[in-house]
Amino acid sequence: MKRFLIAMGMLILQSLDVVSVRAQFSGDEIRREIIARWLQAAQDDDTAMLDRHLAYGINIDVQEDDGQTAVMKAAEYGCTEAVKYLIEQGALLDLQDWCCNTALIKASINGHDDLVKLLIAAKAKLTLRNSLGGTALIEAAVFGQTTTVRLLISAMKATYEAGAAYMTIDDLRELMLSDLINPLDIQDDSGRTALMEATLYGYAEIVALLIDAGANPLIKDCEGCTARMLLRQSSLKNKKEVLSALKGEAIFPAPKKRRVTHQIKSKTNI
Image (tube, rainbow, N blue to C red; front, top):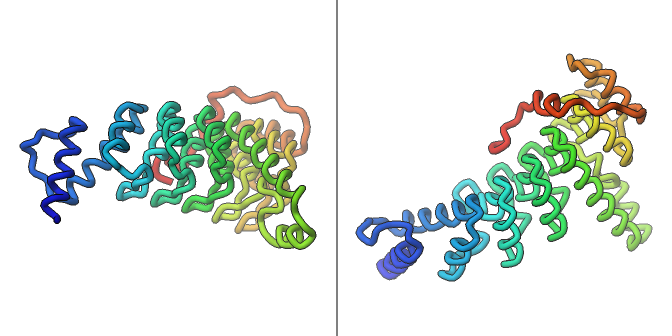
């Protein structure tokens, strides 16, 4: 049986133009090679190759050793056609890699707004957390992705407002005891909200968007700091602008280049 599986794997590899028929692989190596080529096709936005893999029976949601799926790869690298194709073929959107990032979190970190729209429309969960406790909104705020933050705010408000219309008193009471009474105020493992992160890194426009949407500026992180206290401790050059945004006052958006100077997390390994 094992020899049969290895032979079938070699036939698939040959059919996909992956390796020479003379190459010698063990069963596990064949499996890893097929998965690697499958994920590479997603990263390359190569829907024809994805289609060929599916025709040979690959599991659309198969995960690499680090937990990555094809839709995660495509979302991270901004491959719109691949994400569309995978959604149409029924890929699961809420699987998480070894850092607990989802396809939506990866797209949000990198500011791939077309993909964020696609994933939201396909009902990807908005409040799943990665290994640092960050949601798609929190990570978008960390990396200064203003348009992405706007899209996520709109989607979260629509989702929770629609849900509230069908809730009973008991449902609402349970919600009030959880951290989802306002999804904009979800805190990561350090106790920071999207508003705190945007404040800390000086993204005044994002701060303004969150305040306007109803984010709470009085929440404290694990060290007892509010967004304004974090701002007071910072060495940002645009403190006045960010403070105005926290107060709900009109601001003049900072130049784009300022929005990418305070990133401390890796985009691919958080």
